[in-house]
Image (cartoon, rainbow, N blue to C red; front, top):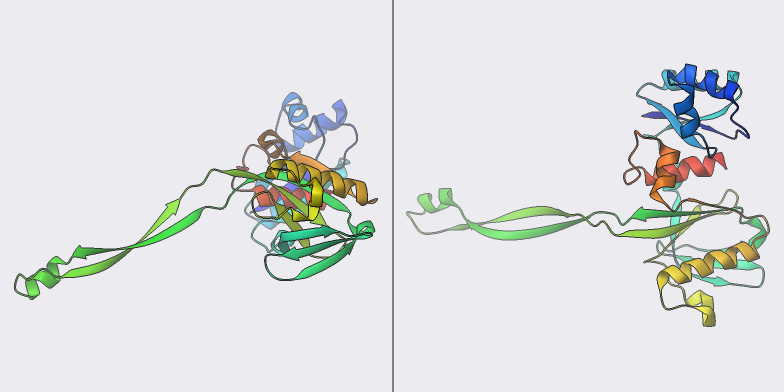
Length: 249
């Protein structure tokens, strides 16, 4: 799937809304309602890259910046580490990841912090049970014989957790997860609950990093829907929403 995103406009005038509505076969009022709070926002998706590219060119012609993202291609979102623990140094943020690598990042290099709320990944449980095999029993002259049957069960977990996506230049990104990251690095300021600790972590990062751009529109489902549009489910495409926001900002 190839999605087309618009972003970067300062003021969506009636004239621009009309030209965009004509391009998308929408009424101007509907267009303005979708774009009231600025971008980025997904406005179309296509199976063929040529169609997405053609629309992106037309958007530039009417004065809108656009992105085309191939959702089947590996993205920067795949090159990130989950933070296991962290420490605030005098001039650097020290990170240890769940995957193993460690990093010392100067505060002035940290340039983007995105806050969002996602669903904990679905878990699969495997169980093995013993059942009577009728075929084996008949062949054995009526002596009951059993066979092992392996069953895979998908456990739906609707628990939501807040994450922080941190970027520092061209480094791989780092993700702080509410229920996976340890908050001992907050020292004596550490709170009793993970949500308070995450809020304190955000506050400390924003205080220490002079070049940081912070965005929290993905904290709410309504913000995710506004970015992804009506055709893409936020629960399924949360990582895509992060990628769109990261590229646009």
